[in-house]
Image (tube, rainbow over all chains, first blue to last red; front, side, top):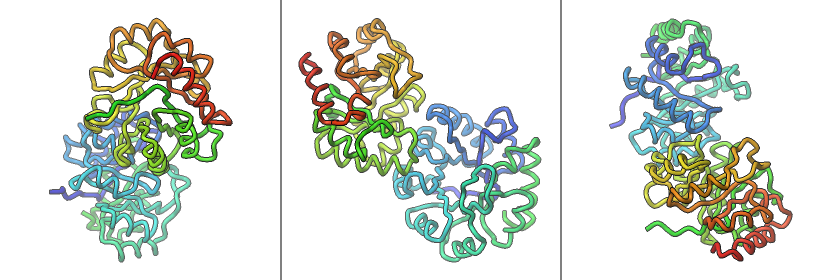
Length: 212
Length: 212
C-alpha cells in the first residue's frame, strides 16, 4: 500500500543557493531540523551527475525515513528506486508518469490554477505543488497564484496541497488559515547558515498552527 | 526477438542546424534519401517538448520501418515506446538503462576508447557510437578518436560500430576499409538544402563499399 506522506515541511534542493559543502550534508541537516519530505531538483547537472547525486541523497533520506522525490526525471527515479517524482507543466504528462512509475510511487504535480489542478487529479497525481505564491529568487519567471485561486483549487480538487514560491518564516503564517498540507521551501532553508536551525524555526511555525 | 538493425546511414537530429521547417519533415526527407536509423537528440527542449516531438517523429519512423532511438532520456523512450536509447558517458549507466528498457530495446553507447567500449559491452550495449572521429561544429569539445584506437576497439569488442563526428561525403571514404557497421551523420544531412539528396549521396558512397 502507498505510504502516507507528511508534506508539512517539504524541502526543495538547490545546489546553487546552498551554504552547505555538499547536497547530502544540506539534506541531512535539514532533516535533522524537521524536514518531512525532500525533492531533489537538478536543472544543470548531466544525467549521470543527477543519478549519482540522487543515489547518495537517497541513502540519507532512507536513514531518516523521509521520502525522496525526484524533480522531472522519471528515469532517474526508476533507476535509483526513489519514492516519487514531481513534475511541472512542461515535464512529461502526469498520466505517462503515473504509468511509468506504477501505483505505489508518489506523483506530485505543479499547478497554478483550477484547470491544471483538476487535470493533475484526473491523471493520477498524489499531491499538488501550488504556486508560486510569491515571485522568488529561485524562479523569477514563475506566475504568481492568488489566494482566491488557491481557495478555488482547495474547493474543487481533493488532493493534498503543498504551497511553493517565497515560503519563509514571514510568509508561511499568511497561509496557515488555508489548512494546506505543507509548505515547500528552498532558499529559506538551503541558503541559511544554520540549515538545521532554519528548518526547526519553520517547523515550529507550521506546528503551532496544527499543520502536523 | 530483438530486431536486426541496419545502422549503415544513421541520422542524428539537430534542430538548430536543420534547414527543414520541422523536425518531422527533416526526418521524413532523410529517410526518403536512405537513412536507416534515426536518433532524436534534444538538449535544449523541455521534457514535454521532447516527448511531444518524439511522439510525432515516431509516427514517421514507424511508417517507414526505421528504428527511432532517443538520446539520453530513458523515460521519454519508455513513454512513447521508442525502439531504443543512445547514451553518452555522462548519461545514466549502461546497466541501468538496459534494466529500465528491458532486453528487447536497442541500447547504444558512445565510446572513445577500448575501456569505454568494453564497459559498454559488458553492461549490455547493442552497438557503439565511436567518435568524434573529427572535431565538429555540433560538438566542438568532443575528444577525437584516432584510427589506431578505432582499430583496437574493433579487435577487442564484438559489437556493431557506428562512427560519428565530422562524417560526410569527404570523410566517410577514409573509414570504409574499417568495415564498420554504420556512419552517424548530423550536419551533412540536416544542414543541407536538399536533405533527401544529401542522404542519397551518402548512401551511394556507403553502399559502393559494401557496407549494406
